[in-house]
Image 1 (tube, rainbow, N blue to C red):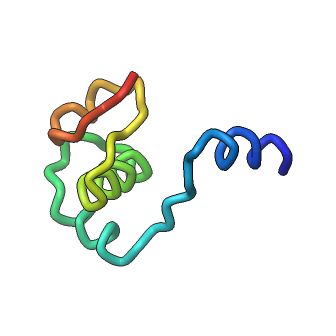
Image 2 (cartoon, rainbow, N blue to C red; image 1 turned 90 degrees about the vertical axis):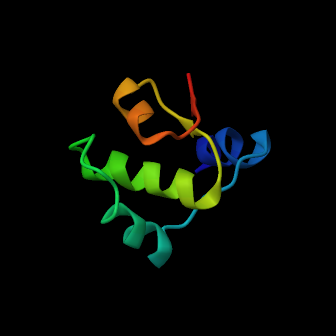
Length: 68
């Protein structure tokens, strides 16, 4: 737990809960990516207007801002 506290909260990040609006958006996304968890991350990024930290270039097809 100490690692999580330092890695997340001490660095100014916050945990983003999965909201019904996120899961609804997943069903509307084109099937550019086959991994359901990555599709959920894309939906969260789109719904919340936040960048997504990932090295996965397949995510670029969704038009999210990808960092890394």
